[in-house]
Image (cartoon, rainbow, N blue to C red; front, top):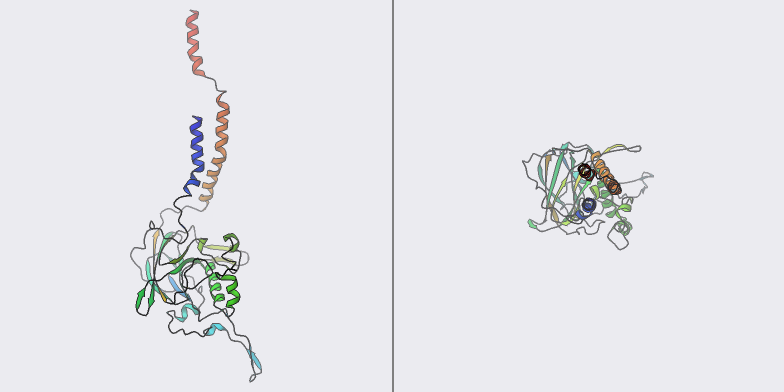
Length: 342
């Protein structure tokens, strides 16, 4: 009896370790078990339900021209690179419109996204295209992305990187893009690119989080690289709201990023010298049961307390097993003695 109890407790103890060895997919793979992005589509109200943003190599707010002497006025004047193309490249063939990369991405908060939409965005060569949404914690959101290339009027195969980021993640990512496309490219390339002396990708994830030149995706897992098809599902524990003494209350929105440049991560898609066409579909399903965050802590507390208490209980039962009186035998002997006395 005690051996069976001990075997059962051993199975309970090792079950989490055995289950973790199977069924774990690597980061960046789309599971076929996830529901596709179906449902009745709703009209898109731009800049209210979703908004469009971009980063392009010919426009960079990171660079600044130095101050120049103006002999005629006897003074100095400065000119920001944010007012005109930074590198002098021809932007006539770029599919992005100026409002996508000239305006800051968080001017106004978007409405909670609780509908189904489908849209197509074009991302130029060595550029970034992003869709900003305000995901709802009361809905499960499924995001589907299909990647193709466009050369002239012909559709060709293509690959890109797809990331899901919060506002804070995207700020760091945007800064990395602008630094890598600035006049000080060689300086930042030595620190951020996939060169042998890079330190961002070589660092462990724990230390990379503290490096200001690095960037992460949401929960550090929503990264799909060198792919042409992505399906990902997001279920939020609650609104992404953070409070601190220095910045006050910060509300995080989400960015679905289509990356076509050679960023600082290893394994990402290289520049392909073509326009990338991304078909993006987003569907939401209302969640029937939403457990509070403290239930996770409670479940782990009960689990580990049971692991600690189980050996103590088994040992206590084992030590007391030999001290129990066998009342059954006493009841059988007493009648036989009474019969012999008669």
